[in-house]
Length: 238
Image (cartoon, helix red, strand yellow):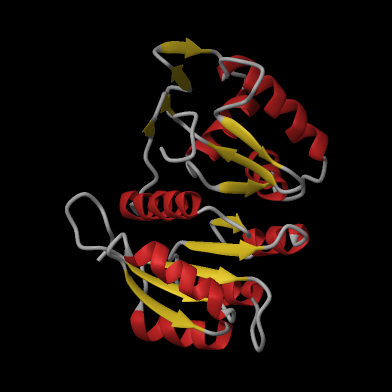
């Protein structure tokens, strides 16, 4: 069962070949009462996905037999379970590949326990809230977005957006707390043939001017070299 305020803790699969990392993850997540299972590589991870059907997967990127990017692709072929990837600071290209392959978020090593726990909570909440029908009104944090009415309210004030700004905000708001790559956002707003990243950069800048409260972005956060993350309350643990 997935964790929320009333349900039992979630089943979390950890896929990593470093014993010291799995020990840290086991300690950090077991204190939250989650049910945990460990796999040493992607092959074992896929076996556990089929046999155990976890509620969330945390996977390293660099592993023997089957790495994290390939594991994301394999999981996405059979499941929409949330995936958080673990990376080191010089693995930006692999992070982008993993996100494009279906990962939902990433945590960079060395990571803080509090950040990891917040990322896990956010993914489990999102998974619990997911329905087969896309909601027509998004209520999250400081935002109310009425898609049919093309209306955006931020902190109780109506915000007037151009069509592209509106589409971009909707794409971000449909994945709160989740990092979206430049390519994913370009495809969502400008179409699958879009290859002009300056379109995205300019529109993000315009959107920030209309919704942010200061020059330091709190709602739309840049993930360097990768993409953007939407935080509807202006902080990580929304």
